[in-house]
Image 1 (cartoon, helix red, strand yellow):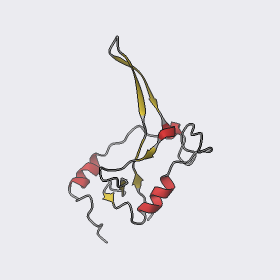
Image 2 (image 1 turned 90 degrees about the horizontal axis):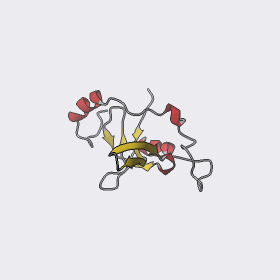
Image 3 (image 1 turned 120 degrees about the vertical axis):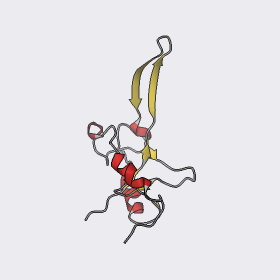
Image 4 (image 1 turned 180 degrees about the horizontal axis):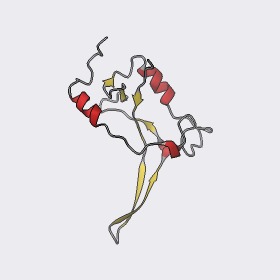
Length: 115
C-alpha cells in the first residue's frame, strides 16, 4: 500500500473591494507566493491519509515535504504555478473533510500510529 501525506501550504489571495458599493469585484490567487504553512510553534503542518497530524521530522513526512516544495522554471522570477505541481486548472477548490473530522475527533493529533 502506498504511503501518502498531505503537506499544508498557504497561498495569498488578493480581494478587490468596491468601497462605494461594498462589493467584492475580483479575487486573484498568487501561486508564485506559495509557501509551506506552519503552526504557532513554527512546525510544518503535515498530515497522514486520515488527516491526523504527524511530526514533520519523521519519515515519510520529510520525504513528502521535500517532494511538495514548490519549484519554478526560473526560481528568481516566479511566475504562475509551480512546475512540479499539477496545472492550476486541475487544482481543487476544496473538499469535504467531514469523515476526517469525525475520525480526527477521536485521535490526539500527536499520538503515535498503531503498528
